[in-house]
Amino acid sequence: MYAFTYHRPATARQAAGLLAKKEDAKILAGGHTLLPTMKQRLASPSALIDLGACADLKGIVRKGRNVVIGAMTTHAEVAESAIVQEAIPGLAWLASHIGDPHVRHRGTIGGSVANNDPAADYPAALLALDATIVTNTRKLGAEEFFTGLYETALEEGEIITRISFPIVSKASYAKFRNPASRYALVGVFVAKRGSDVRVAVTGAGESGVFRWPEAEAALKARFAPKSLDGLKATAKGINGDMHADPEYRAHLIGVMAKEAVARATGK
Ligand SMILES: Cc1cc2nc3c(=O)[nH]c(=O)nc-3n(C[C@H](O)[C@H](O)[C@H](O)COP(=O)(O)OP(=O)(O)OC[C@H]3O[C@@H](n4cnc5c(N)ncnc54)[C@H](O)[C@@H]3O)c2cc1C
Image (cartoon, rainbow, N blue to C red; front, side, top):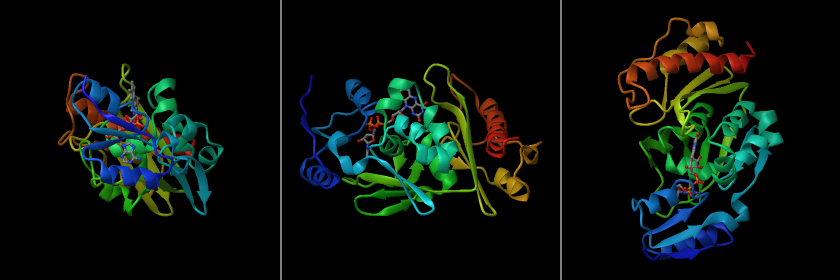
């Protein structure tokens, strides 16, 4: 056993104040990543700041052409939200395919995004939809937010408060999941906004989530599964492990991209 103090502030502002005061403090959201890490002694914070009682970090609203999701909103709440299902159904589908019911009812969008696991689903949606990550001090675009494996642009003491997703004309996600963990072996999110198309890949990159420019160019010409015929992702820079080698993952990127476009277009 090692000792740590536990705090349960009522607002994000109080949480930020505690974080600034306590040395080596860590934010606790759903705890699905942080607590196992602590059990394995890979993290040993002196204090845990639990955001569970911060009502200002929860909830989903539509603001003009954006869907805004509080950081402490669970995956299950995103999956079941009528607002998300109506405005960005691909995002609701993604949330409904994270882990299992237990994970979806504890895990939060803020925790998942802050953790930036290379096999997590949300980073692909944020990058493809060009979402904005709002913290207690600033706003960051997804492109500048995800900086590497388990790395983000978050600074010491910074708290994600909400994530704003632009509503696009077409968007969807397809994932080949690891049958044991259900994380993405490869997941591809596609989004069409006006004439712009973005394709973001998770689960495969050695440095985490990335965009696939060749697929974006092909889909800009025509947003249809057929546009990806014959297009192959390179295995360079792609992850290899006991679950799948780089060539297999590269192949899956093409297959998942096609499936995502088919789902987005109803073809
Ligand atoms: C069995 C299992 C299966 C899973 N399968 C999937 C899957 O298929 N797909 C998938 O994407 N994920 C999956 N996950 C991960 C799950 O989605 C968790 O939600 C995610 O790991 C972290 O979210 P959390 O709320 O539990 O965060 P926590 O574990 O509480 O926190 C994670 C990290 O983020 C920091 N943090 C949390 N909230 C904030 C905030 N608002 N601002 C700044 N920093 C913050 C914490 O300090 C910590 O460092 C799985 C997890 C498990 C245990």
